Length: 250
Image 1 (cartoon, helix red, strand yellow):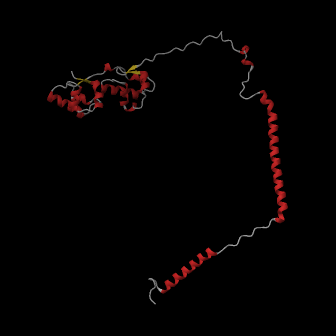
Image 2 (cartoon, rainbow, N blue to C red):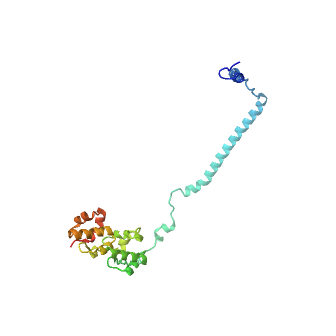
Image 3 (cartoon, rainbow, N blue to C red):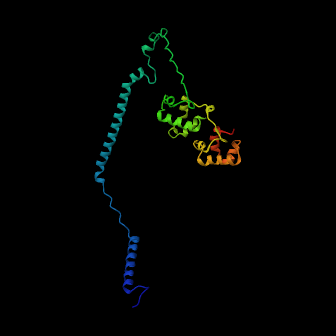
């Protein structure tokens, strides 16, 4: 006998048997009616059940009555105290009466504390010893301030202290309490006569910017103003704002 539906005879017989078993299970679950579970007969214990329920109800009533009696006794015991010292009522003491008040007419006023003026340090005229007298400013900070001031030619604003590495987080309001900055003490850079070496040492000039200024000056003559300086050097606006207090075109 040949293949049936692409299966051998054994495979066909096995598949058919499996399908018959599945169909038989489905038919059994479909038509099988389960018998109801028998309910226990409690008629013989009816009297005992009724007695137990009556006992539980009596116990619950006794608990409720005991709680009510306890609350009533607590309220009766604390009522006199509440009547005597009502809540939120301010109690008066003998010292609150007039005769217990202190007589302050003979007391002498306390002397006023003497105020001291803080003598501020001018950053463009001080040395390291002057700076170290200020709290939170030790010798290292003082040395860095003087060194940077000399390279700049003087400070023109208090904000320039943040350009010093170890003072980047210093509170400027605190500095204004102890220091002053007078821009008139700033040493100007004579753009048309300064040498390349001197120009390169300034914190706001690098070698390229200094070389650009000197080369233009040698080829075209003097630079007359800030606008021409920016055109010649192509300096960005932020740098020009920092340089403007230091440049002189005489």
